Length: 134
Image (cartoon, rainbow, N blue to C red; front, side):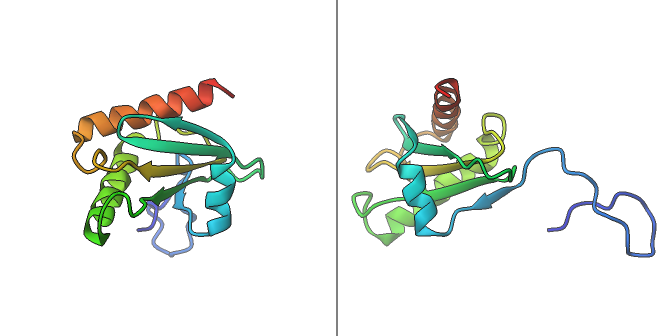
């Protein structure tokens, strides 16, 4: 998906319009997950949120997802991660800050069965508490 064009110029060389929010990318490297694990954390009923300020000047918000085998088999772990991704898509940006890494960890028996609105409230609460402590 590409951002909208800044004007209706049909020459094809117009720059993309300025985005009003920081871009969100997904954490892929183990080292990033380990750095987040050593930083701030906030547990909620539906998930555990780890957060770390990168201090590298990049305003990108990066998010990682993880679910251990305690959640269940591969089907259950994937379902829990899908729910966490959906929560991030709907509730991350109001509470997230540019330049931070967030890792959402699913909880056994809870992340899959918890009401979706409650999961969104859990994420908002965790972000408020994390950023209030900094």
